[in-house]
View: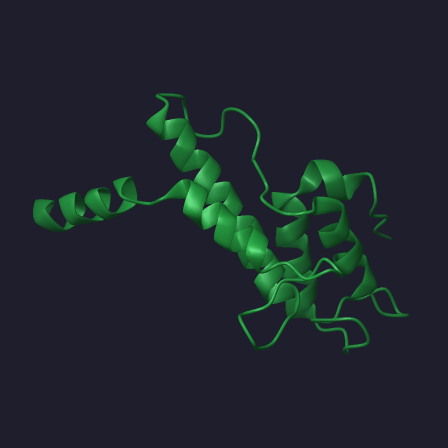
Length: 130
């Protein structure tokens, strides 16, 4: 119904983009990974940081009156370290685990591929996929 759509629009319009970016940046560790406060850290959280960064950039473009997808994505993180972390998750057989030394799994490869798509300009120059 129209009321639910209006509520969603109001919530989205109220998002504090600067605050969200600050939070994302605060969750990155020195090794480039991301973790939930005081908990696990692995590729899942890095993917979420990339996805949230992309959504913030799209929302910001919309607020400026630009079309979705125009302009670059502002990543509130050290992208080079994040890419290095992704690469450290690659196993001896070429797959990717959730973290360094973890067993490779197809789901993790797809997650890495999604992260790669979010940060493609930085990752393409550093990744070689066979």
